[in-house]
Image (cartoon, rainbow, N blue to C red; front, top):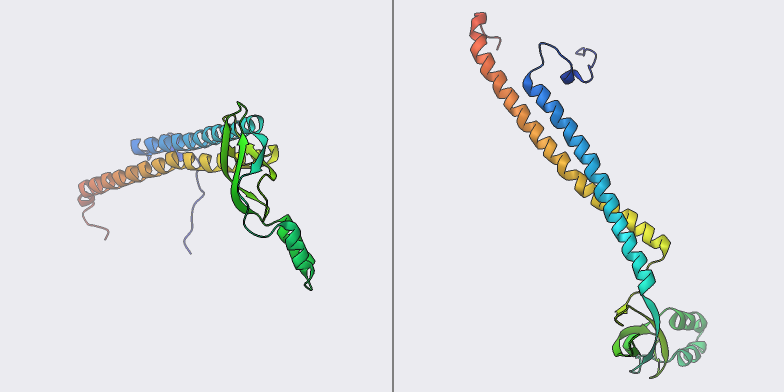
Length: 209
């Protein structure tokens, strides 16, 4: 088994006759790449997370629940009729609870915005909801339909996830760029080594391969 000598840390930064200019340049490139990687990742991730959290916080303030009325009979039997029909079966109670409590169908509803303007849209309601049945929808300041805003806990989770993804993506650019530049320096160093060997090798009187 080959013996390896002790590893010398930061040898490119130390003055020694074996260090070449390319070694010093590579050391600075590696240092700069790592600094840019850390800074880009942290700054981009923090900025993205902050923007997401502020945006979701603004939605919680601006988006409001609004009372809407069903404008078109919802498809399917009404909740009461479904419960009575399912009650005749052996396990109808469980199915009735699932239908009345969880299943929703799309239908048209109408509501008035904060400025009194009329709006219509498609939302999910209980099956069989009759025309005029009140339902709660969420709207933005312009009266348009929106989803329920994220809670503070959900906003923090989304901010962390998105910030992590953005930070990782941003950090990849300087890291990859530094590795590409180091490979080019390595290739150039090997070319210089070949040129020097071709120059001084014959002076030894014989070749070693």
